Image (cartoon, rainbow, N blue to C red):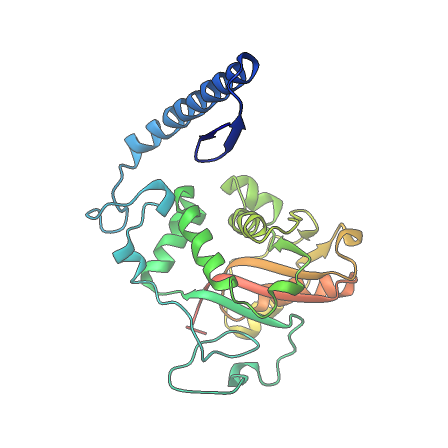
Amino acid sequence: MLVLDLGWIKVFYYQDREESELVSRILHLKNLTDTCRTWIEAPLRLIFPDVCQVCMDAAASAGEGYVCERCVGSLRRIQSPFCRRCGLPFDGEISSGFECPNCHGVRFFFESAKSSVVANTLMLDLLHRFKYQGCLWLEPLFERLFLEMLSNDHMRQNWDCVLPVPLHSVRQRERGYNQSALLAEKVASGLDLPFYGKVLKRIAPTPSQTMLNRSERAENVANAFCVTGDKAVTSKCVLLIDDVLTTGATTNACAKVLLKAGVRVVSVRTLARGLGI
């Protein structure tokens, strides 16, 4: 008996005519797959050579999201200590769990919120490219940042499904996609969880939150969401995914309607954490 190792599959076979023909077909299929992959990736390399699209100097591949390790190192990972409710990072040494002053007196409908990195200048630029300029080649980097954060998450074993924060249909048609849904689908795949992209619906085309303060943001999205597929999430522990968390107003509004629809627990996880408000 011989072993044929194709990298992605190992085939055990005996050397008779029938098995040899089978192995030949498998090898042909592998060669065809490799050729198709080359054809698909070739046009991408013409537009984005294997060079970092941030510094335009160091090497970076499609699998790295075209961002080199040096530039990735400029992203500030959020590590303990941080607020156990909203995930706001703090400097210094705090050994026990704590809630930051921003969370005092605020009613959150999610059990906790955490983010992978601080929304510094570089991260905001990458997110702007991803959201508004169609730079979807950043997905592998964002997926990696998300899954690194979630690998040791205290809630990981409790989640039953993954939901994205939705865009209003008008804005999604304008943009062509919902960046949070793209991220949530990657997270669901990485965690081997069901992805429900249509359970939450944005029913109000709210203005941008960018120039609003904390109370204005909460008021702006207070009645912006509804649940359309409540049976899929009833009594479930839901992982809610968004790109950026600043005050938590948007994700809190989503969590509120999810709990009202029968969801048991909502955890919020985002790619970046804004610190300005």
